[in-house]
Image 1 (cartoon, rainbow, N blue to C red):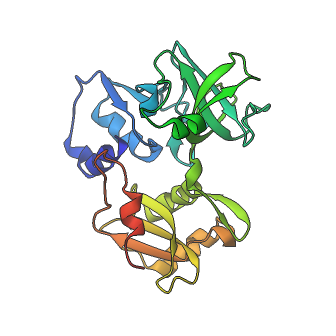
Image 2 (cartoon, rainbow, N blue to C red; image 1 turned 180 degrees about the horizontal axis):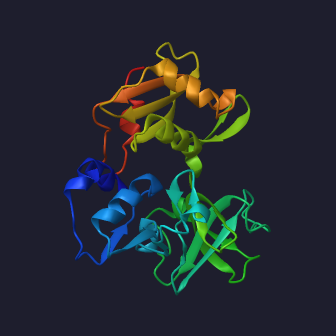
Image 3 (cartoon, one colour; image 1 turned 90 degrees about the horizontal axis):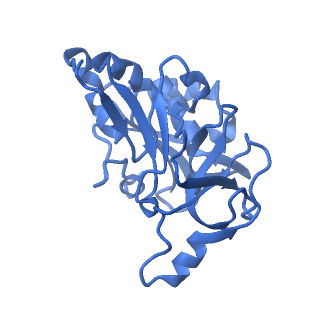
Length: 264
């Protein structure tokens, strides 16, 4: 998973693996920020970004990263998830499960194919909500709703925008936490950043909190000032917390539930 690469970043200058042929990542968004340094460690390898949910057993889309074309194939600092493998059908749908008309319109990624499961064991309710019929697409049928927000760019590659359940409303505005995380990563010069919506200690309101793993703690006011020049007021973090170590779950991803359980 990309989080492993983030932890290796501090050792890039000490590492050299010219015989490596493939470097494959999956499981979470792959940040562009660490790939240039990693490419120097494995100069002869092809870097591949794979995407797929467990229900797709498992990888369904693929993007072969090239350092000379990533400008069109990255979003908020995250590498494209590419295009479906042979045997996989993919489409982007809106809230009403209609396929979106414009290639650049965001929606939920849905997939179908022989490797995609047909449902959940002894859970008909969850199966009915996650596996739905989509008719107005090139290949109609039952598709799995991944819960991931995507759009298709001008090159035909799927761009990962984040989890739909990571989209939140703040002051009436729909906000993608991944966009906030991207700008904080750039400003803080830290690759491990997580934004969450949490309740204040007196439970009176929801606040936007950003967690940063770094041993270089920049003053909070300095970060807030720089962020305010990029993001509108409703997307501004109300609190920034530095961590010596970001909590990681068993899958190697940032454990957001653990972050939400921290006292603010």
